[in-house]
Image 1: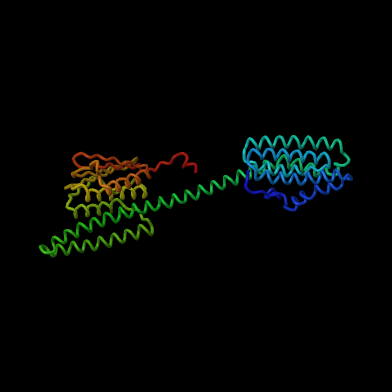
Image 2 (image 1 turned 90 degrees about the vertical axis):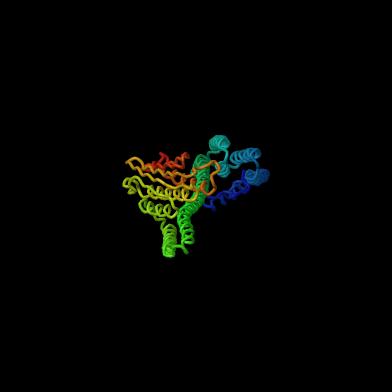
Length: 378
């Protein structure tokens, strides 16, 4: 049953000294007997009881019932011969530690019935001897009734608390992993766009440095400003994870598209009046990733962004006239689309992709984040 044992039970509500007294008390009852034969028999039974008690803790499930049967027999004999009823408390403690529910119930019923029956019989037969012990007898019977359930449910509680602690540790680990992945996506989206812009402007400045030095100088200045802005964004994101505004993001994606030589057309109002900050942040980051993919992969000449907002949802459409998305989509682009889906799913949003005469992305996000019934109750 267990690979450890305690002759003196712990955490039962009784002092360890009381259990030590219970261990030595049977010898007092035995040595009261005038018969040498009874004394020898009593000592043997006490030693056999503690041996069986030890073995019951370390034996497998089948032998446990054998040792408990021997302990019950010894407890009955000790009660009948010497009026010693306190082995029943040791048995009550052990039965309470029994993990199998059916076995616990069977042993509990057998032990309770045998103990009460034996005590009743001996009390009638030896009324004068047992009457002085009546308060202790009542306490022992109550112990036989209550102690197994107390120990059983205490062990169940400890087991559940252990499982809950393990589950909380696992949840904490998953939260750490999720947060790392989220930060990785944020860094990818933020730095990816800015580095793409820096790369495009660097190529443009290289081409203009001889033909149009002033224009090249202006592009270098833009590169400097973009790099500073990227550094500022990364610092803000790491320090406070500040939410992005869609109006600001529209300005940045416009700059990125113009630097890539892609015409930009905006329809609708970028001021999201009905969306909470979390949803606006997710929409802004998704738009940033979508435009980054247009610049890197689409080979488009024009990009259209349409913003439609109602009280129920916000609908963003990003369309380009590029080559579309083939089945052999690049790993980097696939990573970006997967990151967008994960962001949008977090706020109950959806991403739809159409690849005909270019690529069209439909981003739909409800303005209220719905919670499941289970989440609402927690």
